[in-house]
Image (cartoon, rainbow, N blue to C red):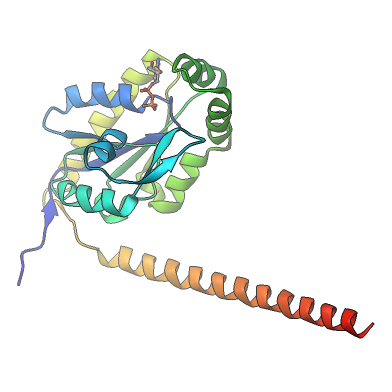
Length: 228
Ligand code: DAT
């Protein structure tokens, strides 16, 4: 029987609306966790050509998430990863141990995105996403709530204390998992994913039922129109 693959150090997913401080914080974090590998997913996708097109409006490539995961997943089996991306719901739950969502006040975020040279629509899109907490919501829906941590990143003091907290969390994780954790699908996640898939299926069934109901209503209407 093949030996089960395990990791003995955690994988950290650092996420948040663009401009919230992911990359800057990750650089500081990596100095404190020097044996960790830092994956900036935008750069990783470019290096490994994980693109499936180009969005002219956003002036950015569209990442092929399947290809991205094919490339990244074996690397995550080692643990010791810092993953930096504003999208968080694509990484398999069984491979992620902590999800940090950085938040930022809107006036500060505006200044940062403006300084980056983003055009007005792109700034507004990101500000709206930050106000609505889109990244946090995605994280909460995609991972167990206990591993999702929301941290403010407005000031350099915030950044320093965020790095301290993540380093302390990592140390704690190692102490609490002397046997490591599996890279394979644990039973509780298999059950959870099974339930979620069944729920999605029944939702899409009822959507298509109501769509066909309204179709038949429309048919009836057009029939009665025909009669008139
Ligand atoms: P992201 O990787 O989330 O897009 P970033 O790390 O590139 O964001 O940060 C954008 C800019 O904002 C950059 O000039 C550094 C600055 N910044 C980020 N977080 C900060 C914080 N907590 N305090 C002060 N400046 C910060």
